Amino acid sequence: DAGHGGSDPGAVGAKGTKEKDITLKITQKVEELLKKKGAKVTMTRVKDVDVYGVNATDAQELQARVDVAENSAADLFISLHINASVNKNVGGFSSYYYPKTSHDARVATAIQKRMTNSFGLDDLGIRQANFYVNKRSSMPSALIEMAFITNAKEEKLLNSNWFQSKLAKAIADGIDDYFK
Image (cartoon, rainbow, N blue to C red; front, top):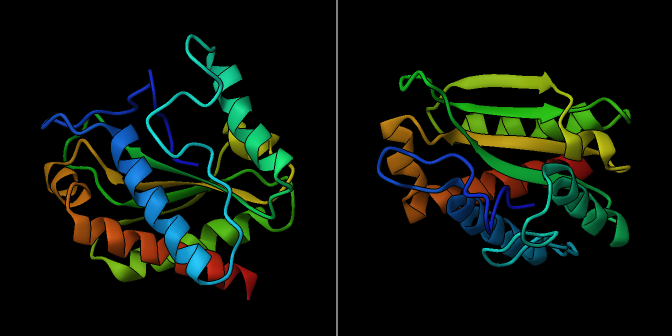
């Protein structure tokens, strides 16, 4: 699930970087890597659109994303996002789960470990949260915050193809680790 999209730009960095654009690019790279590993991948969006449709409520949009996973009988639901803070110095990776199955924390941990081992960015940890997509999806899920768009250094990294590709590999490898 590429976070945000369409009418919802998500967080916006000082240089004008939109979360929705970066999450889509990274998610497409993760999709490609997972398919090479033999996975069947279903995307919630493959272009800059609202998943539910224009003028949806937040709940309708989030439920539409969950519905994509449920209707494809997914084994896992991963939602990719980029964090933001009023403190421009905050940076790093974090992964969120809702403990509805015995596997939610495990998938968040596997992805978080790969991300933090791949870069010199802060490890903000694995956290339990009441996020809609994690709570309402029946399969194990994690919401991944891939750095901070409000941190100038991380915004620059997020816009670079090499960082996007390396981050996608870390996420795909984390997903692979979860299934081993």
